[in-house]
Length: 164
Image (tube, rainbow, N blue to C red):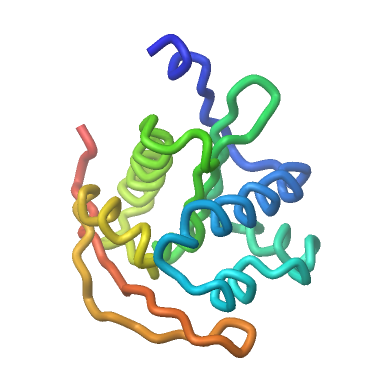
């Protein structure tokens, strides 16, 4: 557990965007490729994603990164209305509690801002994790991403009055 102690959660900074985008692309290619076809992976983690547009999507949101040393190993963001948009953990840091820690941070934000629920559009890959975190599937979806259809799940979790 010594490695876990060196993990630090902090607010997202604008200069984190490039590292988060690289982590996202790598994670989709290495982890989500178990559940999606190559054309779906290429559309989802496209090399044409504009860095400035990616960075701007974090603006005005609850957004956090987890670092280990100088590197970002996970990140998340949630709108002020409680929609968890992105949650990704480095392929080499899976199953170390990083995603759980990020979601717990967002849950605290949801409590602090009197939200009733958090929603997300979870990938096939992420669905079991979100279920373990108390989310329930509202519906299966087929969404278009750069001209390619992807399956995901609209999920929802009620926000408790207190995380403790």
